[in-house]
Image (tube, rainbow, N blue to C red):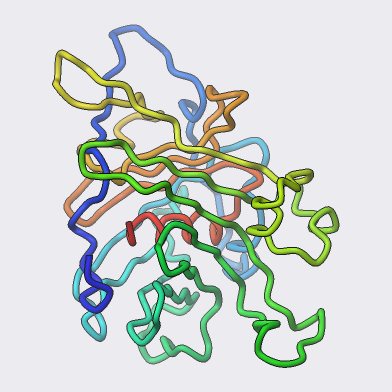
Length: 281
């Protein structure tokens, strides 16, 4: 995939099909999806930074505009509410960067989309195997930065190398209760590599199984018609000790349209950041 063109249509990893429910079967995890009754007065910035309510799954749509502003694809996150879809976030890859670097804004206006006023960003390492989603704070490696102005890492997504015939393997790490005191001054990446996982929620993508009937990899996604098109980008995040509880689900429903559903303690910004890393792979 070219960093310059921003075209993510070439997919890495085996294509994942939705496994249809047997008639009369009932699913678990995210099966009881509900839309959010979000008041117009709710501040978007506060909402996208807040964890999902504990008693519901938040449903969103992700819209991709290939070859958008500056030749880079543009991605928009819309919250599905009882009053229709509501714009939340927009992101695109910053072309002038040595590693993959997606900037995220809360304003759906290209005039605001500069590399100086982003709301958050998702940046990879050189191998595109590890991505960190940061807020808009200052990088502590670039001079003296006070703790109040220092950037915070919101989540980390790790991808194991694979090929087009093998399902992707993804691991995501987010603060569990939103309490970063357990992390102290370390980054989420450092905590993971050093095995300091107390207070962190470690998720992995639920692995699909091979279907002899369809001659393809399949996975039973939750919710009615939330995933309808086969794609290597279709995936679910669960804890290994409780794979029935789905924390995050992403799936394709159109050429450039996707669903993104998530649960507490994940926030809309964390979910969108994970989505952007998935498009880069």
